[in-house]
Image (tube, rainbow, N blue to C red; front, side, top):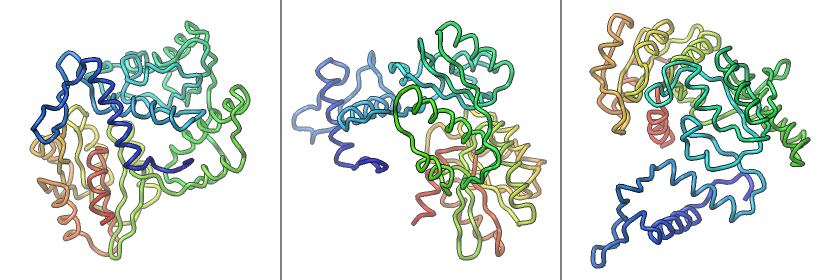
Amino acid sequence: MTGRMVSKTVWAEGVSQIRRFLQRRGAVSAPEEGRGNPAPTIKSKGDFTYFEILTLLAMLLFRQAGVRIGIFEVGMGGRLDATNVLAPRLVILTPIHLDHEAFLGDTISEIAREKAAIIRKGADVVSAPQIREALTVIENQCRRKKARLWRARPLRGIPLGLRGDFQAVNAGAAIQAAAILRGRCGFPVSGRALRQGLRKKNWPGRMEFITGPRFDFLLDGAHNPAAIRALARNLKALYPRRKRILIFGAARDKKTAPMLRTLSSYFKDVIVTRAANPRSQEIGTLLGQARGRFQRILPAAKIPGALQLAGRLAARRTLVVLTGSFYLIGEARKILRR
């Protein structure tokens, strides 16, 4: 099973187990007889989000499969995140920037406090390079929890398969974490496995390049100003002379105005659209924020229309870049793969 996606059958069996468990505890109402077995209704006092159910499902399936080391990515913060029911021996903190301000706070320090709350007593903590305000919060939390802090350095001198200079930061944190797993947790991480990871050439939705017969696509899930700045910087370095078109959409709670301002330094043409998700920002709002920054601004009500519009505008070897939201990227990938 190592390295494979969970099958639909195993997934469905796991979800059914969770549903039965919640029904026994009165957290969901059972299907009514004679109604074609509809989906159970979650009671108001025990609402569960998709992410919470998914986290519980991962815990269940990992246990059933006898997984020794489970890797969980927090959903948003840390303190109130679904993953905080776990007691991690190892915590990895990537660079902390302003994101999800409506839920986590308006400053780097406030957001760092929410994220650092995932640190438990006696844990090993690997931190990528941080802004000073974030690092101070992380250091204080480690002292309170008697946790060991390891400050990872970006990997230098070794070519990486993935695009983007920020991947050196990610690789440095991953290698430090692997060393801790091997040395302190007794979990064997081989040099061969590390080399395979560093050579990995494609990660869906992260500077993902899709080659077409006439023009190409690049998909990146950057969805906050810091990530968009990194994307723009790398686009300028990797593709300085190619004609390019931007397809942009984002969630309503994102700071889309500064994101579009940054992207306008690289793109002349932008198509604004929205994913088929109720959290998506309205196209009219994006049009207003893009006005005066791009030479050509075009709306597309849905992602399929945005892709078709880009195809009509694109010349040979044009690079069509989609960014702003993982919802947008996920929906577009399904279309492009077909």
